[in-house]
Image (cartoon, rainbow, N blue to C red; front, top):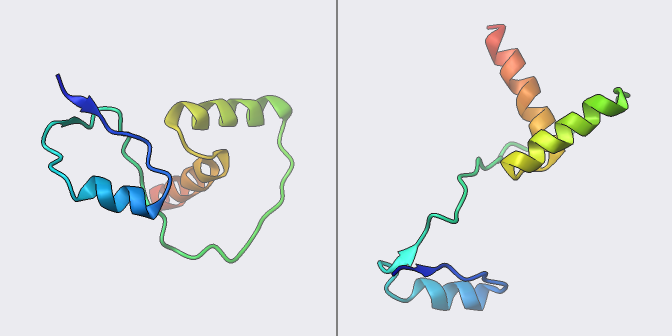
Length: 83
């Protein structure tokens, strides 16, 4: 039986964890993520219907990401589709 990966709360715990043999661990608990490196230096403020925001937050929660990231990804996809 494979062991679950523990929650690591400090850099020291992470370093100690990575120093061991990891071949017997179950990594299925991990979710893939997309790292955002581009600087976000502009801000927008907009009003949307309550139900729309509720739906956006629910979808973001299902994906395990902040709802603002979901909105940003949606905008990026819409702009890329227009090219």
